[in-house]
Image (cartoon, rainbow, N blue to C red; front, side):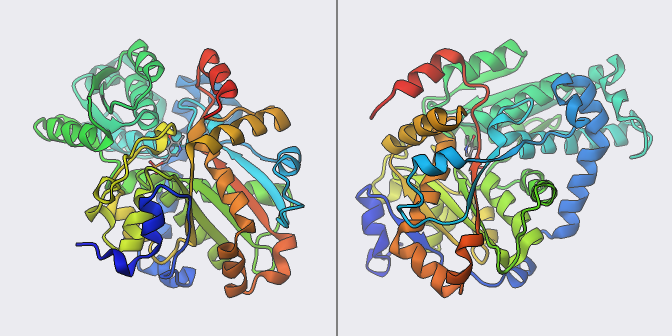
Length: 437
Ligand SMILES: *Cc1c(COP(=O)(O)O)cnc(C)c1O
C-alpha cells in the first residue's frame, strides 16, 4: 500500500494541482542503459528492419515516396512561438524546436513509429516462416501481392487504444490484408472510429477506459492462435520502433549543424500516456546522446499515471484512480490511468523528471502555436510546451545546478515533441482553436 506521508508531492497530485517532479533515481546514462532489458543492438535491428520494409511502404503509401518509404518527420525551429511564450522574460535560454511527429505519414502521430514497426515485425516473421519471403534480402514488395494478402487475410491483428495507436495499427495492418480489430476506449474520438471503419478495420467500442479496452482485446486475441495482440502496456517491439527516432534525430540535428554534448545540452519534453512512445524515444536519445540528453515526460493533472507510478515506486501496481483522480482529460492520447510497468522500470534510472499540465493550458498552447507559427497540433501534443515553460521553475533551476549546467543553458536545444495532430478533421481543428476552458 501507498504511504502518502512518504510522498509529499502526491498530495498536490491528488488535489489535481500542476506539479514538477525531479526523478531522484536518475543515474548516469551508461548504467541506466546497461540495466535495461534491451540495448543498442535491438534498436539497430529495428532500424534495419524498417529499412528493409521501406520499398514496400513507399509503394503502398505514396505520401512516403519523398522519403523513400521511411516514415519520418521534420524538426523545425520555433522562433515566433518562443517569443509568444515570453521565453526571454522568463529567463529561458537556448533554441526551441518542434519535432513534428504530429505530421508523420500514414498515422499522423508518434504511433506511426512504434505501431507500424510492430505490425511489420510480425509480418516479416510470418512471411519468412510461410515462404512468402525467401529471406531478409528478398523483395519485400512481394508482400503486397494478391497471394500474400490472401495469406494475411487469414490472420488477425488486434490492439486496445484510446485512438492513435489504433489508427496506426489499424491502417497498416488493413493495408497488408490482415483482419484488423481495434478495441477502443470510451474517450476515443468518433472521427477516429469512422476513419478506421472506412479503411475496413473492425472497431469494438467500450464504455470503460483504456485499461478495459486493452484487457478485453488481449483476452479475445489470446483465444485465437491466428491473432496477434499489440500490447501497448508491455510490448518490446513498440518500444524499439519508437527508439529508432533518436538515430534519425541525430542525423537531422547534424544536418542543421546543431551540436549536442556536455556543453550543449539537449532538453526534450514528451507527452506521456501509458509511457511506450515517450519511453522508447527517451531510451533512444540516451543511447545516442548519453548524459547530454535530458528527458522530461508531461502528463495531464487528472491522468499523471507515470508520475504516480515512478514516485511511489509501484509502477503498474497503482492507478491514478487509486489516489482519487478521474483519469479523464481532453488530451485523449494521454487518458491513461495506469502506466506500463515495463516502461516504468526502464525509465527509472534514465528519466530526468515529469511535469503535469491542466487541460485549459493545452488549448492555450494550441492557439499560441497556431497563431505564432501557423502549425496545428492536437491537444495531447501541446502538453510538451508545459515542459518548456517549467524551465523557469525552482525545481528545474535546481536540476540545472545539480547537473552543472548553469554555464551552458545558453547553448541548450529544447525540443517539444509534438506527438500528433495532422489527421484531425477541419471542423474539429476550428473548434479546438476556439476553445477556452
Ligand atoms: C499515444 C500518444 C502519446 C503518448 O504515448 P504513450 O505511449 O501512450 O505514452 C502522446 N501524444 C499523443 C498524441 C498520442 O497519441
